[in-house]
Amino acid sequence: MVSSILPLDFLVLSRSRIVEKAVTCSSSLFLGSLSARRQFAMAGIDFALVRSKTSIAEVLGLVGYRPSEITADQWRGPCPIHGSSAKSRSFSVNTERNLYQCFKCGSGGNQLDLWAALTHHSLYEATIDLCNRLHLDIPRKEITPSPAKEQG
Image (cartoon, rainbow, N blue to C red; front, side, top):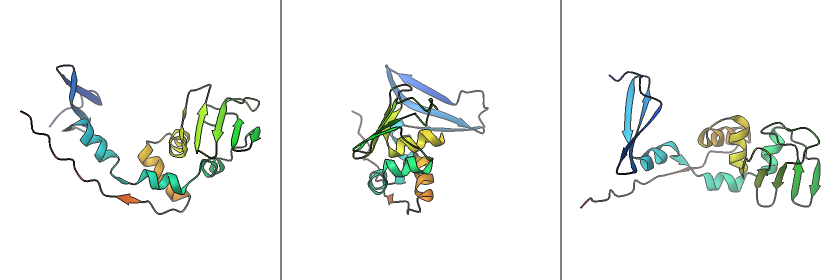
């Protein structure tokens, strides 16, 4: 049994490279390569399919966002992430490309990134939550493990 003395993310370094990541969680220790941990964390959801089924306008509609200026497919207004004033135009949304950028807080990305920032969840959790709120089936995909590289 491992005590919880170790920090949440403890990186083991070898020859200037990150070799393994150890995470303590309620007195357990999990070891694995970074790529395997990322695959496990994001396993099961087809993010590209979710992005194709949702729009950034739908995401902003869920929080009741009202832009102060609309020009064709470009929306400008206050940032819903950092809560700028109503007169601010620091938040820019391109509804055709489903991208956003706030020039004040630096936040930017697609509709899934926006929902994750608004709900303060990880991308995985935010995608599940968004699918549930929009009454979409969560598209699943199989992740095939990559073949292990032989060390020589």
